[in-house]
Image (cartoon, rainbow, N blue to C red; front, side):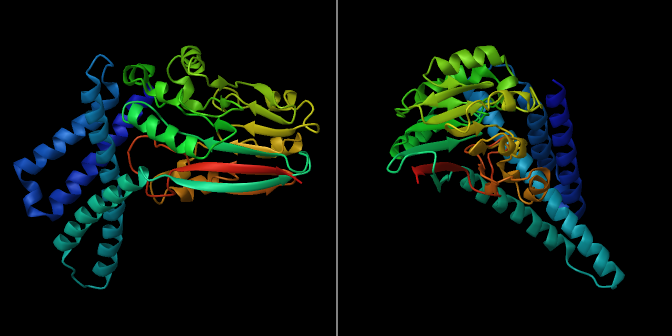
Length: 362
């Protein structure tokens, strides 16, 4: 509830700033109809996450879409308004007058266009291929791993979205599918009502499908969520390991939110020298510890690369690797930008992605 309250306060502040900005600079923004539109979207943004699952799912989805797009619009209104303020101060010092009303109108249009582009981008995933060679596998031995993270099934993203994801994954013909957390967004009830997980039961991965918990897996009854996921043929790895073909070891950690230590990572490092050892850790925070304990491949997500430009300037400073691939000694680390989104159905940073990892024996 504290998180929902905090998000509601942020939504209120963003909406208020945007309203005051447009009202001050655009005469027609002082009209009752403009105020009514702003008020309606603001109230929905504040209340949407608090809607009971008892409401019809179609209504919940409509409210969630309106909230997400409105928050993104308000966010970019704020950014453009800050640019406007800087220009105003600069030209005031130079005693030069600009058509501020026209600039505000440009801000309004630019905010709409940015959100429209970001929404299109959010539903245009790309395939990223990473090729690895290891002497831990015999020559001629190979595995096709597919990594996805941050799908965020819930209020906005449901069964049809999961069905498209399943089709894309099956086309890649993976040996195994690895899910690096946040398969769910918030409430289990929305996933159950939309039968979103049923689509993932159609995944074809002969060597198995594995999920490591992300921070969102703990929001609503993680034990029940694990049971639902496993009923669809997905094996959950919470501080546990499994070995495939006596060659490939897959380890999944509990999310950093549940256990910030490296204790499980170390205790699960048994025989890492014997297997090609893959570690799934939702938040990219324990790469150096993984390298020190003999893991070969570190897979994570969580960052969304900031999701909304220019937020990647923050995530790049928060994590050693917020996106892409990097070597840490003998360890290869891969952080995915994620497949879905959190909050606004908008992505103006890196596109959503599926990561195909081809591992071959040296």
